[in-house]
Image 1 (cartoon, rainbow, N blue to C red):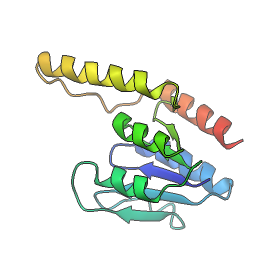
Image 2: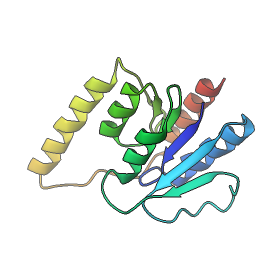
Image 3: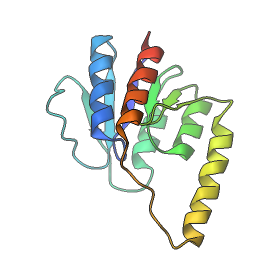
Length: 145
């Protein structure tokens, strides 16, 4: 199992937790983003910078992941594609996505996007409460057992 992190929108704190766990488990970890990645604490981790643009990081991960790989991302449509390729997907709040729950989550996400557009385009928060950071760490630990 390899670890892939879509770093374009994934919080730094959860990224650090995941990288420490992956290295402890002897996993290969790859961080993908469309800008330079500032993670000098992890020189042994592969960092891939793709061209700027929507879904470029997702496309890179999708093209290179293998069945059973773990992908960390906040991007629900990308998770849907990764899961279809056999990946395990986890968001920054510790929610594990599976073939059984991804379609429902995608529908909810689409409905919320429509609501936000109707309500004046209020952006989604990128802040993650501490309880969600702990939830992420706990779910990650259970996956890596």
